[in-house]
Length: 396
Image 1 (cartoon, one colour):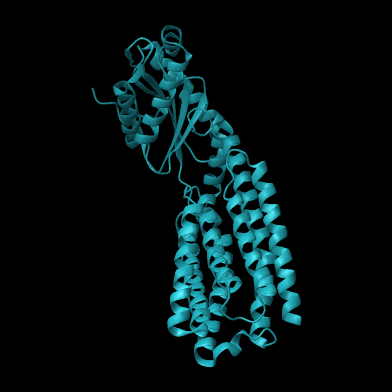
Image 2 (cartoon, one colour):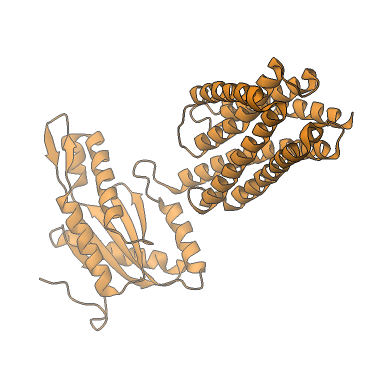
């Protein structure tokens, strides 16, 4: 009786959370983040447990066959929803229909060749294997594609591992003790459905938390990045510099201002759409030329800032020259005129700085060097006033 009440409450939880996931997905118009698939998974599992309640003893029947197929399809649906959450588009309905049909046929084959106990053992074993794979995928994700959600993924992996162990235990009990393991009044079934109720209480809020975490991270990223080039904006650059200089192993940085020469002429001649394309191509050239750990920012208009760490004067001058050459060699198409747009850039360098408070001074130094480069003919690298003993002369 107690287990039946627990199972009834579990059905209610699952149906309520299915409705909640569905409502959330309707608010996420452009990116549902797998919420609609999670709603389907909760619905399938809720229906499976309802069939278990109304189906009576665990014997061979149409309701029992449907119950087993839905029970196996539900975690697969959750896995597909997780893939969509992590932006790995995957079909849902066709794989589930294929799985349901295949597993229904497998049930019939096992039932008529090995008996009812084997069919129930098949479900427990299949679920244990499936949850083991999901646990491994969650742990792998915490180290790879979901590093930003490392703690959350490990917690989810631990929760899934629990239901994996219980299904493995049920498999062993059925194989060794027969159908007595499925007695609803037995201690094992009480523990099993109590844990399932615990999961049904904990995992849906975890899923909602992950959605909120992802949305707030994206909002934070949008606030820190230029919408056109996806480079850091000034706010994002200052936040990144602050984080860098708070580190005990923080290295000094050199500031480079990159300004596209005669950019107004490009806009006036080819139009603003082509001008935006040139800005994106320049941004790509800077990203491809910069070293790992360097910060790249679109300061505004046609001005970009690069902060290079872990280098000396020689290395920074070489980096600036590579950036200048990369921009000089890039091409941007002008489809309306059937032309290729080329551009150059002038780069001003600052002395090194080792704290956030010195950023504005370094920016002024690089800006002054930039204007000297503009006055000297553009398409060149200039540096701030320097100590000749520590800064090399540019070759040529």
